[in-house]
Image 1 (tube, rainbow, N blue to C red):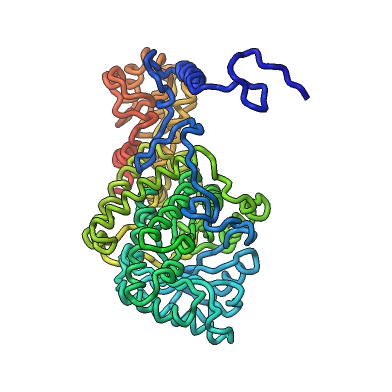
Image 2: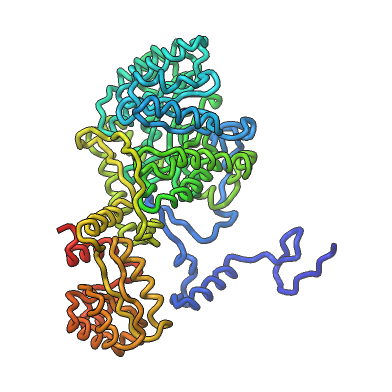
Length: 630
């Protein structure tokens, strides 16, 4: 069908009747929208979109618009540098990535039942934490009683106890009657990750164990290069990437010194990275990791056919919350999506209740089905590198590669990862990012839904069997402490629960609303949301008159602290009078929902609730004022 020519001017895009838009036109439209929102855009501002840009914790700028000029040629799937995947046909040939689920229950009988339920309902491989923080090696036989080991690969996470765990698994395999050389899965020997978790592990002994067992079991993956401790300690994507490369390089040295050939050593290492709810960072991180490892292998002298990476992605532990844990289903779905699109060979989705302890059957089912839906119903694995060619993803991949490689070089310049752990270099770098991340969560610029934003104060914490501790070592320069983004706000909620249990009521603040509903409802809702994030109940909020009415309602509520809520216009007229009235009614402290302007301080406000405030510090101060914890 013929389309009429556009009358708006400009060169038409080939095959369409629409004119080609220029970046200058787009910038003009952006400036117009910004002005309507009250953001000042000066006449000389050549790039108004910079006001919409943000930055990652690695300092990478995320722009609101990407064009072909930002895109890069990342090659072809299955070819070096493997940015677009390690196989030409992606995950499609295997009908999807490997669905691998983690089991860390120290009870062999419970693990046996959970393992069987997983394998009967969509899981293709098992990941067993053995030794510290998991199943004892002696329990492997019972846990794997119902497993056909030639059909379901078993991957271990043995910590420092790698020899006992490996011997136990291989003995179960031998007793099954299957040929020893056909064993599949992975021994997961990873002494450096064990050291990051505070365990005492000898890398040279680990390499010798891998050499001895690998010679008899040529299909087994021997060592795991696990960089998730960096992520779980609050580190950045580039730090995780750089650490993964440093671990891999260390294991190449150890395995070749132990007698393995370089190509075999590279082929028998599996990498593990975290997948977060930031799907684009996850996609770009996995793509960058493959290209970085290809470069490491090239520098070692390996041919192109030996440079691909075996990559296992596991949804982030740090992003999981104990409060409102059902929101974790959304987080893990986004993370799983990012891992699949990013080209992970195997994916583990943590159950939504994993931050509370050992997951129950329902949570494991949801974790399994998350992957099943994405693979079987969304057909996510049927597209080879679905993010390939996307200008934003290609640019972000390249930026993460550059930042990750720089961090890898820093670790290598320090003498390699073992020395960087001994000196505390890695921990210092990760701690610096954690403090920035923690500050962003405290100011709610990095919101945690269900915890720092939109909390459900009436929820009762789910009860789960406590999980065995994985981080059991003494604090040391090499230890990377496990942290969760929500932990500071959740600590306040726990203190509030204890206060309620001890006194019969939660700590409370009275919302002294002034003027009509249209004037005060937005700030009253904002204040209530912020207060509840700290476990503080918001009382009142129903007055629509002047200071006298608000003070009378405050006195009747029996509260100790009040928060004024209204518009700036009402504050200009009544704020000082309202503060005096509330103090006269017995308020020990009067807060104001709004920006901390000098005129409001002069009116007598003791504190302010506003977007961008240090909400965590404010809530801690309120806990002290209200006697929480005493």
